[in-house]
Each structure stands twice: as structure tokens, then as C-alpha cells.
Length: 69
Image 1: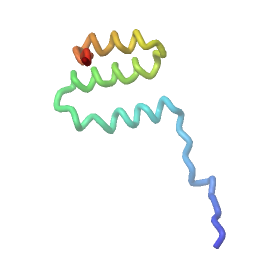
Image 2: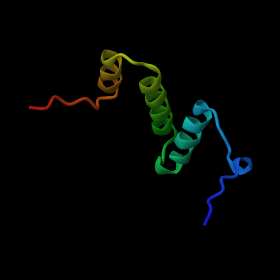
Image 3: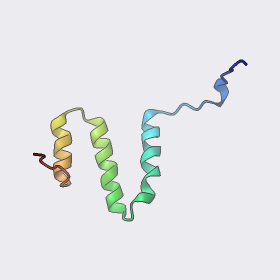
Image 4: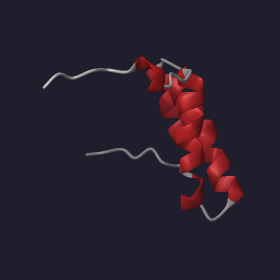
């Protein structure tokens, strides 16, 4: 059997659009709009920033950072 790849059916999306699709698909998991908006801010902040200190600051700001023994 031969395997034929049809490029006409492949949809290529911009990475920004794909991230937005993924984030929007998570909206039903949040009962409150404010919590979902915090998720959006956190995801984009982590994706756009490459400094570990900034990511730690985001987590500290929302009270999610924990000091592990």
C-alpha cells in the first residue's frame, strides 16, 4: 500500500492563534470570568517571558509559589 499525503487538507495556523484556541477551549473549566482572565494573563506572561525570576514573580503574585523542603 502506498501512503499519499494531501497538503490541500492541512491547515497551518499561526502559533499565537493556536495558543488562543487552546486557552479559549479551557474557558468552560472556569465558573468565574475573573479567574479565566487571570489564567490568560499567566499563560501569556509565562510564554512571552524567558526570565525565571519573572515567572516566579507571576506565581508569587497569585499566591501559587510554595517553598518545598
